[in-house]
Length: 141
Image 1: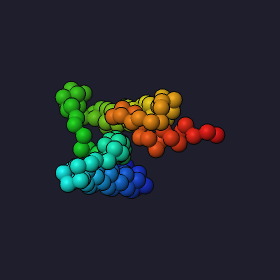
Image 2: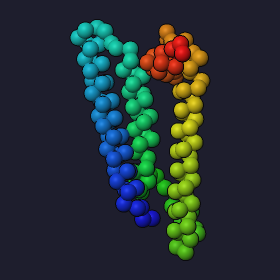
Image 3: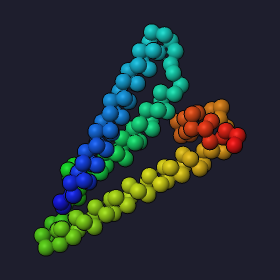
Image 4: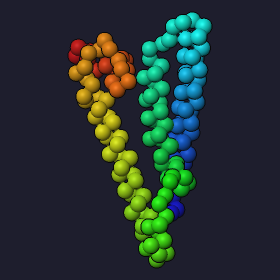
C-alpha cells in the first residue's frame, strides 16, 4: 500500500520521537540504578515516567511499523483469498489495526485523566498517574 508523502514524514517523525523516548527510558533507568547503588536512594518518579514513555513510544512507533510492514502478520489468510483480493484485504486489515490503536489510546486517556482525577494526590503506584498529573487535576479552581 502506497502512503502519501506527508504521512511518511509524519510516521518518520513519530518513530524518531519514539526512539528518543526509548533512549530516555534507558538513561533514566541507568541513572536510577547508579543512584541506588551509590547514594542508597532512588527517585520515586522515574518508574512512573519510564512507564509512560514506554506506552507513548509504542503508540508513536505503531504507525511507522505499519508503514514499513514490520508487524507480525498471519499470511495464511492472504494465501487463502488469493492475489485478487490481496490489496483489499490489506486495506481492511490496516483500517482495523488503526481502529484498534485508536480504541486503546482512548481507553488509556480515559483511565489517566478521568478515573484518576478523583484519587488522592499523596500516593502514586504502578497503575495510577504520576503525582504531577494528579496535583494538576485536583488543584482548586
